[in-house]
Amino acid sequence: MAVYTDVSFEDLEECLKAYDVGTPKSFKGIAEGVENSNFFLQTDRGSFVVTLYEKRVSAGDLPFFLGLMEHLAQHGVSCPQPVRNKNGRQWAMLNGRPAAILTYLDGVSLRRPEVAQCAEAGSALAKLHEAGSGFALQRPNALSLQGWRKLADTTLAKADSVSKGLANAISTSLAQIERDWPHGLPAGVIHADLFPDNVLFMSGKISGLIDFYFACNDAYAYDLAIMLNAWCFEPDGAYNITKSRALVSSYRQHRALGADEIAALPLLARGAALRFLLTRLHDWLNPDPMALVRPKDPREFAKKLRFHMQIKSPAEYGL
Amino acid sequence: MAVYTDVSFEDLEECLKAYDVGTPKSFKGIAEGVENSNFFLQTDRGSFVVTLYEKRVSAGDLPFFLGLMEHLAQHGVSCPQPVRNKNGRQWAMLNGRPAAILTYLDGVSLRRPEVAQCAEAGSALAKLHEAGSGFALQRPNALSLQGWRKLADTTLAKADSVSKGLANAISTSLAQIERDWPHGLPAGVIHADLFPDNVLFMSGKISGLIDFYFACNDAYAYDLAIMLNAWCFEPDGAYNITKSRALVSSYRQHRALGADEIAALPLLARGAALRFLLTRLHDWLNPDPMALVRPKDPREFAKKLRFHMQIKSPAEYGL
Image 1: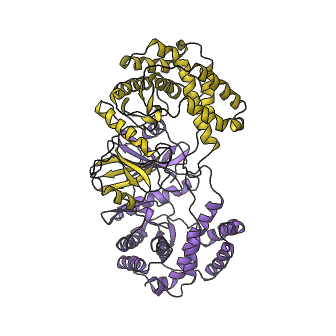
Image 2: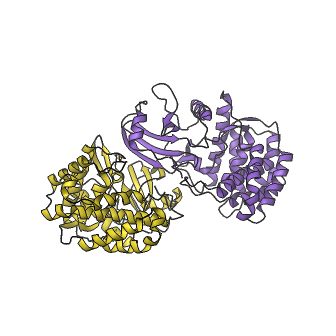
Image 3: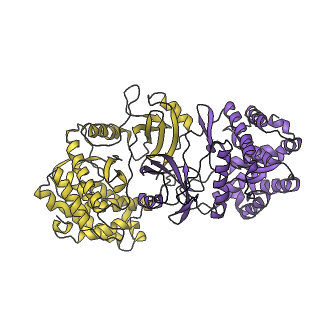
């Protein structure tokens, strides 16, 4: 959860003059996302989320993120829509931060998704990949190979203070991943953070996808590898091959996976585990005193990385 | 803001089986209150707040707090209402904490209330005092004279690390307040924390009062003195006598103030400033690592205490 910037109702009211969203009935900080400050706004015309983009989100990337959400919705993906202000702009300044007003989606995110929900989520990812294919803007993945090397350089020295042997595990796996990383896989717009927190369900069906602030251009199969990490491990650390099989086969019903993509999955899954291990390790070692958020334990992903490092064939993921 | 205890939707769903509140549409942690964990719950039947009572709220006090909210609503005060479960109980256990489901009130709290809003708030306090008069349960004020002495004993040694001279200012004023504290003033149920955060407005009128978790039995005029501290100082520290006059005279339109209550106001205002100074100082010196809340700066109330210490007559408050 996070509310980094405090916004008074009076400041909001001033900002709303440029919008046509009705009369406010309720306005509260909410525990949503870890990168930005989010507020729930109800007016006589509906419900909205007001997002203030904090330092990790560059204003230069807003046309990509907000434009993508509009593009995806036009192509059948349910996701928050930026409300354009009276001048047609997708965002404004509020308390010194770029801020957008987005439509609010009903639905709840699940902590312990079942097999059927993993299957739903796999379909949703494939539909997102298809829907994003015509989007005109591009954004490189800042958290791919080069980003990992940078994060490793700044965290390795202290990694063993978090868990003995962690520095060595990171160096070894990063070297192997850098050496073997697949290039030329089918690529396009990916969500890059489709954890269960970012998928809303209503009565067992997906009502929407949220939090597109890591979206970028990268290999589609890497997005799927992120989901194997995020959806298919049990709380005790065991990999649930039934969930994994359900997720991937539902994905394939909406977008075919090439032989190269399937063959690359173990390596992509290692890369995905390393990516979340490194960002969590960085946040763990450098807690932001202004962040009203508890850093997540990096060791969860160290364990997942170890699991993927010993995978010998995509069949072990249930494919 | 605060969400101390994380509640998954799955845990909530289990708890809701004992309630008749409809099918959940949305469930999110909200930045409300500093003592408890609060969640916004929307169902097909309406909006609710789910409150988990953390360590500072004793389950033994819940019949007082929740019963008071029911009593006040029956006597015309708009405030959240505990939803009774299928067994008629006002609260249940959720994630190891006592928890209640309360109705959600529309309205926004103001950061910089104007004179007219101070007047509205003064009326609301008087109506609350009148409405609470027939409430059967009692709760002593744990944060009155004896509580202050205890807090002073645990904070004085480190007080000067926060602001030079603070320890001496606290000792001197506490001794004077203890010596002169008025006894036998008209008393009954007071809110004891009616800051602008706890008053909701809609189109300039009060739509509800919230956060009754400091409510107790004490002098009515002490509750008014808390409001002078909470509503009548400008951000630069200046006391706004126009706001103060508006607040007190609106109060008096709904509940008469006796000569003894008026005479006691300067001392009560010192006590109120000291109470918030001491609790903030305590939280500042002992930050809770699990609290997703920034401790409030105690120096704001040190400044207010100094102001009240030099008041010679209630006339200086605009009376």
